[in-house]
Structure formats: C-alpha cells, structure tokens
Image 1 (cartoon, protein in one colour):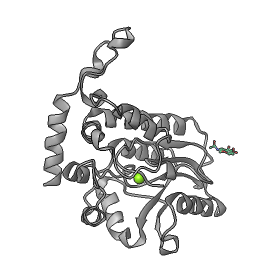
Image 2 (spheres, helix red, strand yellow):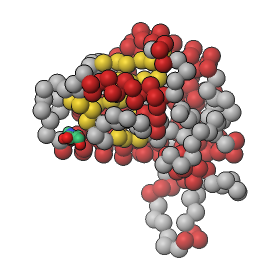
Image 3 (spheres, rainbow, N blue to C red):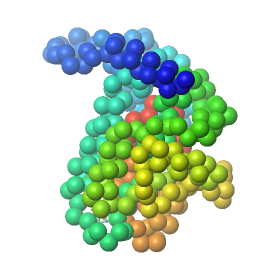
Image 4 (tube, rainbow, N blue to C red):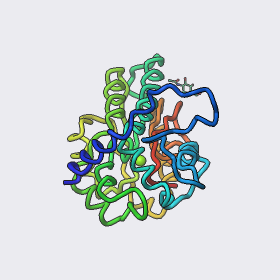
Length: 259
Ligand SMILES: *[C@@H]1O[C@H](CO)[C@@H](O)[C@H](O)[C@H]1NC(C)=O
Ligand SMILES: [Mg+2]
C-alpha cells in the first residue's frame, strides 16, 4: 500500500517537473524557478535556501520541516532532484574510491550509515507526510520492523563498486541493537549481501547523541586496525566528530535532523 502510494506520488510529481533542462536566461530577475524541486513560491521563507542551509550544516537542531516548506520538501524528495543530488554524491565517492591505491590487506573500510543512506524510508514518508511530526516513533518503528525499505539506488551502486575495488563495507547505524535481525534481512533484501561489520546502537549508548556514539565506534574500528577511507551519511552527525575517515560524503536529507 505504502509502495503503491509512493509510486503514485512519484509519478504524479514527476510530471510537474522537468523544467530544469531549459535554458536559464542571463538576467538575474528572470532567474526564478518555475516548478518542481526548484519551485519555491512561498513568500517569506525561501524553502530552497532553507534546504541549502540544512545541507551545509548552517541550519541545525530543527525538529520538523517548516510548515510552509512541507510541499516543497515532498516535491524535492519524490521528484527527480533528490535522486540527481544523490547521484552527484555517489559519483564523487566512486571517483574518489577509484583514485586510491589501496593495500588490499582487508583493512580498508568504507562506512555507510543506514537510514536515508544505504536504505531509503521514502515509502514511509510518502505515506505519512513530510511535515508536522512525520517522525512518529511508534509508526516509524512499525515501518522499520516490516523490513521493506528499498535501497537508495545511488548508494547501492557505490556499494557494488567499492566491493569490486576490494574495499570492505561497515554499516554504522543509530538503529538499536534489538533491530539487528530485521536490519540484516532488510539490507539483504535491498541488495546489500555482504559486509565486514554491522554496528547498531547498543544500550550503553542510550541517551547519547549520534555524534558521540558514532565517533566512539569509529575510534574502536581504527584502534582495531581498520582504516576508514570513506564515510557516507545523510546526517552531519554521521560525518562530524572524531575518526571521521579520510573523506566524508553527505547525502541530501531535508526530512529530519539527528544531532
Ligand atoms: C588517509 O589519511 C591518512 C592520514 O592523513 C594518510 O596517511 C593515508 O594515506 C590516507 N589514506 C588514503 C587511502 O588516502
Ligand atoms: Mg541516516
């Protein structure tokens, strides 16, 4: 049902897009996006500027998408722009990974976050909305426990490329330890068939911020001899802190903020 709705929304919203191929006139006052993900018709808060602020880690600590930007974020996520933006990130990561001459001693690892990185919860958000309290913990947990999240296709492409280059993959997620089985099954179902480690948030980290938990687990990894050559996530708390790896890659996520 959720998937059907998602497909329906994705199809409908796609039709209203597609103007980004048009030539942009060289006059500043004409530089007004007409539709789709560029559409930004709200007087006052510019939702495109808000999203840019989120992606650049200037807008922090927000609880929900501003009410006037709910439609904008929905169009962005379900239309082409989210996928195009994700593709740029993944392609840069592939170019970077290909440029490295690795030791192939099994110690080079690439870190992936899971939600909105390896896996996409877009079917959930398409059903429940992008604005006020989409992150209903009970409903979201129910969705997670179904184990039906699809891969973010761009991340899966990168994952396959990394394996072919001899890089090991480590998943480091804020999902709690008691979601291990469902997460393993979901990852496999989505196309991620192998990994070096799957690190979930143990009870010793309860109440600790993602940034603290992830830094600490990355430190342990490096102390046990792994080299983190790349690190990809949708939250800045995946990519900041200590032991972040040689290079970080930020996927877009204007839906929620985790500190
Ligand atoms: C990662 O960074 C370290 C420290 O700067 C450097 O010694 C190492 O060569 C880098 N590894 C790769 C694969 O670039
Ligand atoms: Mg995430």
